[in-house]
Length: 140
Image 1: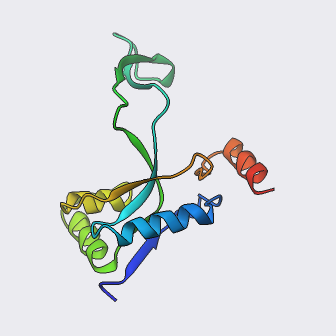
Image 2: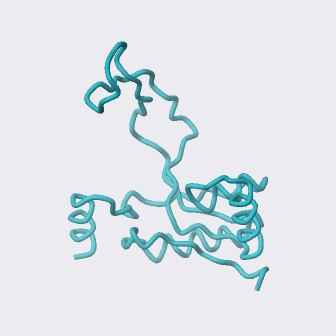
Image 3: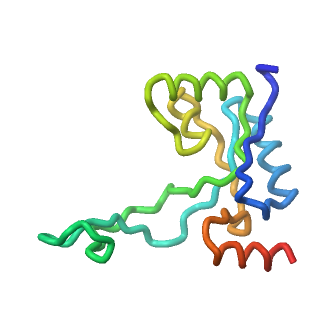
């Protein structure tokens, strides 16, 4: 069991296409560090700051700097790893007081470099009513 592959998928991503699932599974089998779906960032990314002398209210946020997006990817699921390695990576992270934002981050902290497999913007994560409407349209 510890050497079996496990695919972690976010239930908030109901639009996963079978071809994407198969692609990430195949890539994981080709790379012992595992694999995850991700999409290269297309938007210009801004790091927010606060206006000088302003209270820390959302309305007072300003564009502090533009972040170089070259090489930046937005992680998706599924993320596929060896069960034993993932369990050990998560245990080590929690034992050290760290909380990963996804399973890939735990694997990265354990020294692994999972393969990025190009996903799709259609594999969206539903976190708002608008995204729910988009998902309903995609699934119709």
